[in-house]
Length: 137
Image 1: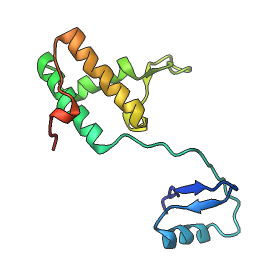
Image 2: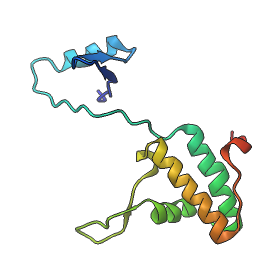
Image 3: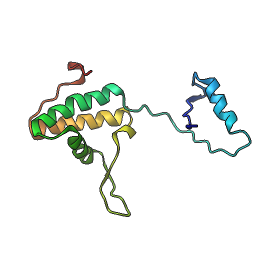
Image 4: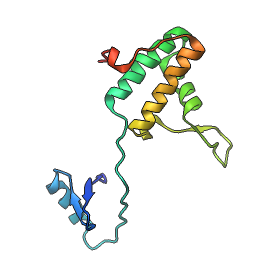
């Protein structure tokens, strides 16, 4: 059984208020763990990048830059993500690493998209329209 992510709100007095509408599935999962030790991780909720943000990046930003440079969008994605989402090199191998775009939240993803747009304008002379100026299927 896959491990569900259970969404909740913590009240002022520290009580857990479940937000999930799937209470039957939630309780079935919790009952499946009866009499077992469990690990509970509670962290602030992060809004992950949205589908419209992702479609804009791939369908507009990457598409225009790739067309200008003659790259495939997948190649361009790897190059720009390594440039703007670079993290410390792997300590064991020394290999370069980057953050994965699905692991970014909405604000981090927006900053990444803006860095790509700025790079396109300044370095390549490619003007990418604002998200509000285009319709991406």
